[in-house]
Image (tube, rainbow, N blue to C red):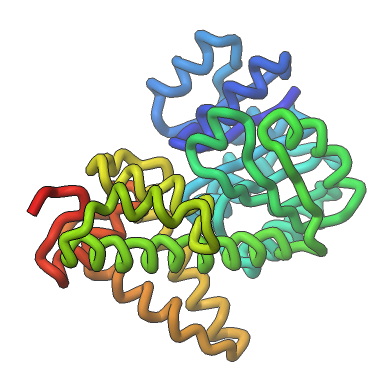
Length: 294
């Protein structure tokens, strides 16, 4: 039996893919409606303690490290009932220190732990093409690999506990700064009076082409900011980058500027939008809207 805790934008389609592949799944989320949706597909509703008691493998994908710790270690959490020899895999975006804390606490109970955050957003979760970046022991990673293959297209063991979370933070620096640069560039094109759709078509096959360009520019042009990866989640991840980097005495000047961009977006109420909404920051600076006729 496999447990799955966290059925949000990412977790729900990931759990659905496990069900489609024939996994016996126990699920929990604070949103009862989504639990009922998964139950209609064959999942068995439960709570964290029940999942710990009945499942040999437990997946979590939750908003913050604090929530992960709560679900795992509160009085009626997963760790209250989990059996030695089981494995917990946390796919949330958290700090390396939080992953190492969870690993250490579960190791005391004879339980394996792998931090395996993902990249690919909601489309990757729906299509089963996520990239897993994992930290932990090889034997635990290998036991989880069949599930990674159902939910994703790649899974790499980066190193020991916390390494997956480091890789995820690296990913978030690159992705979000890339979106910011793309936003700045297309606001420039718009302000110059050149059709941004034509600019996109002209540059996407060259060195400026990227997965971010192809995923986010069409959303900006269509003014479609329905979240695949919410600004609020990426804001949290960049906070984690800043805290981790400063703890390591690593200067991150570009990421620091990105943090201020997110702060402005928070003040103006954009936190529920897709992170392609970073473009709003540059649009307000230049007093234009990408994709809007001048």
